[in-house]
Amino acid sequence: MTLEKQKQAVAEAAVEYTLKHLDFDSYLGVGTGSTCNYFIDLLAEHKGRIAGTVASSEQSAQRLRTHGIPVLDLNGVDEVQLYVDGADEVNPHLELIKGGGGALTREKIVAAVAKEFVCIVDQSKQVKHLGKFALPIEVVPMARSHVSLAIIKLGGEPVYRENVITDNGNIILDVHRLYPMVSASTLEQTLNNITGVVCNGIFANRPADTLLVSSRKGVETISAKS
Ligand code: 5RP
Image (tube, rainbow, N blue to C red; front, side, top):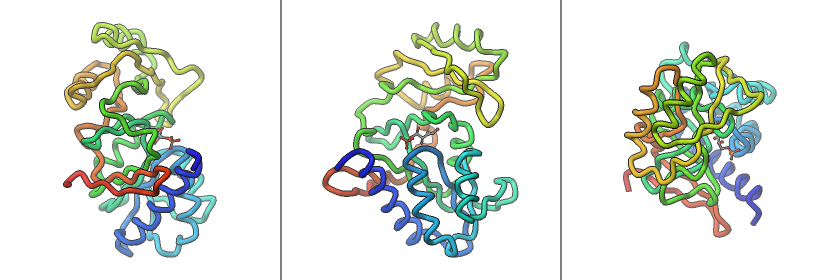
């Protein structure tokens, strides 16, 4: 099975999971990226079943609206019962690196609000230690040099993502040489403490609750509780 087919398979499994676990009057968080795009397209077949969604990016909001699926402002929603999103890397503790698509800040906000965070990946994203994927960090534009120097002091190698402005009007630095992240949650906090950093792509303090992972053999469900 190709990686593309594995993305489709895990997106199908995520739709099934959503239909089974999302209450009729509850709101669904929808993430960003190519795996989530499959999820959105398949979800559209069941749109009558979804009370409303909140999206982690303008791109996903647009795709949802194109399908006629309602998208709400997070501030107008009392609770997000389920949040479905992809990842760039996931370790055995269901800690993640996210932000390959540049949507990390809104993704982290929706994940923080959600009662259950369901991460959907193909097997290529599973790692023992995070950090081979360059860590995306969203930065206020005027703080780019200051943040870069602080990251270099921590041993990282920041690379400015050319021609990208986030939905929040900021820039992205992709940080190399952070592998292996032995304590991802400590590094997440350390990076957050650098003035000018809006958000970093480590999801360790709020990891996924459930992982759906596709491989050639099919889709496996892994719960953080198990
Ligand atoms: C976007 C993300 C995505 O979830 C992550 O990059 C995975 O994307 P894809 O499903 O295209 O591999 O964090 O900011």
